[in-house]
Length: 459
Image 1 (cartoon, rainbow, N blue to C red):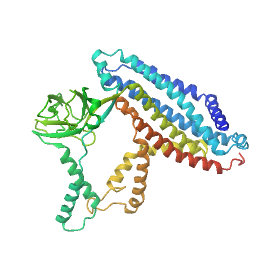
Image 2 (tube, rainbow, N blue to C red):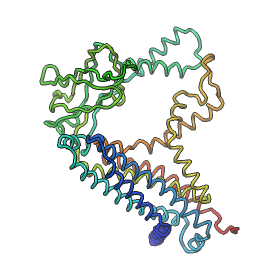
Image 3 (tube, rainbow, N blue to C red):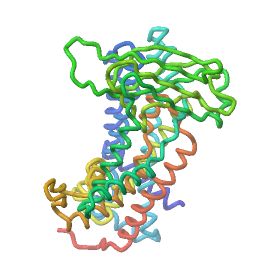
Image 4 (cartoon, rainbow, N blue to C red):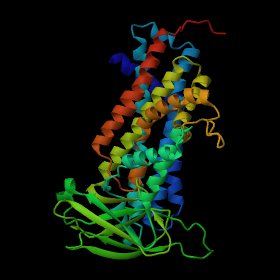
């Protein structure tokens, strides 16, 4: 452990010697404290959070993320290029300890900078919140500066319906289908749209199971988060985009709430409903009536959910910062992995390439869903590149599974909407991001560095 801490200490000293900490501290101070004070929001809780919480945490993550990659690539690659590493490896210190010691030094720096920047954001958040109007302060305390759990209606099982319609379609065609995957996908989308659609002058009912948290939410108000789309895309300038909706909450034969409101499509809406509207069996009935001449489409994934208070904001905020810290741990492992066998410029390019690969999951997701890289010929129904598809689609599918282990966590979105980041989620982030994915990069980097020739003559 002494050798590990000694190498970590040398890494921290090198970061100060390179003026990295001073420069990064100045950038964080300007971006996180000074700019949000100068920028004026619209006076609402939503605008306040957009600037102070979402913006600040995104800037912190971006600045620390890129500095982590730069330092991780530079601290090891430059030591090798300048011959300084030879003074270390001739001592009775295994090379894997050199690699791990540098990772610990980088993470110690990240922990210090993240704690300072996160604490500044937390203090600034409460200082600016006191200057909002009283109504907006109450909204902030109920919807953002809180840790809320989420309950959603059960997702319908559409597989039996899709199977039945698919077999019926095959029988009706009476011939072999050239692209069965595309046909099944079309039927699945048709079934989904039929479930999500609320025709004019019709209604839709949901039943949300609150049995597991019934005692926790008793006598406490709940919040409904709702989003919908309309079939009416075009409208005249100045025309209102709000549509009248009639809601009913609770069982009809007991105390229930009926409310009429106007909501705009395409964005999330949150509103409070009275407590104790669930049945003895722990079901909360919700009914929406469409009394317009336009069809509504409510997404199955995030169309409607019920939010309830589970804890305070401070602890939730700390858990969110710890998940950001897990991301930084992975970036440090990626940078050191690249520097284990590459020069500094090439290692930085390789690490950024791996990072960009993680951001390009949208394209890979589309390719996997369509089962084609270059698309399908609409005349023949055959893919343009069957050989390329057979190679890349399985690769993309596996890459998506790996990247999803990291991207499943979104602390900034959760904090900005007042959602609970549980200890279980934090534990999964540590195990998946740091131990699994980061451990793979760390193991590969340590093994490669252990077998690398470090006594090559330098020009």
